[in-house]
Image 1 (cartoon, rainbow, N blue to C red):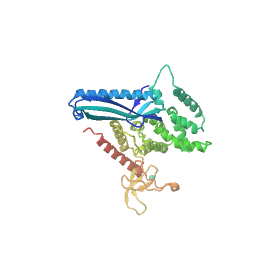
Image 2: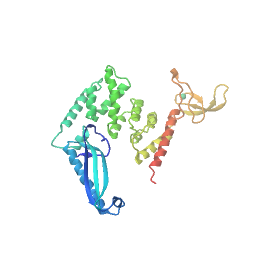
Image 3: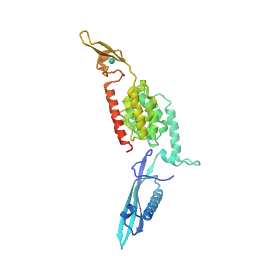
Image 4: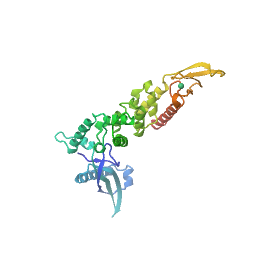
Length: 352
Ligand SMILES: [Zn+2]
């Protein structure tokens, strides 16, 4: 396989299992022109020479990495140094990086070979198969050694099964499962999800938002899995509480397409249908006549237009708080914050 070389300290979708060595390689370029001239663009010829020296240094670094059985070089740093002497200027192009060993599905995906299967690929597929079997039992949840394999081999194929079990455990709908395994699930599920590619993780989490909407919203928040693309596919009135609950969550980077979709969600929120209605009425026996809100729960209270129901709920559950759209004050605040985020993003992503 090819050696992956990157300036970042980690590689997405891969786990560094060993730091092998710091690799360094330098190529000297002899010339008689100043570095400032090169960067000023006065000499394409010398810039080409510098570029080819850089390529040579890169090839040399890859060979060194291969020689020490590394899978990747991370934290790559490039240095250009100018050396004067005997009326001549020379440049030294230096590359420094850390050779590392990876243990990841990525290595196998990169090294697709039709005639051979690596040992780690074989091991990985055996593990997936055996874990799938274990998940057929209703009260199974990965034990410590299973988790070790799931994280080490990044077994994302079984993420949907793990997520399903996570929700059952979080909602406490599962019986006769050892406490230690419930604890392991609570500790390991989110780090596992965070180690996955965004698209992969999103597909797992958004597949089911109805079983435990608050639990799902919490995962989306904690793992930065806000996905406008998924949310626009669920813009139905009955999903409003879930959608509002994830408005405050984030993703790690926003594109213009994200912004466009976020505006679509904004317009859905602006056009939520009424679930209650207003009547003209009297607040109490001696109260004055005015607008009364009949909320979706059937309470009739005197409020200003756009106000929230003040009726108490049964069993000490607080105040109803729904407005004519069936949403609470806290939800209205969330929507307003979301609109502010859209305004800031529009500004940052504008073309001028
Ligand atoms: Zn009410």
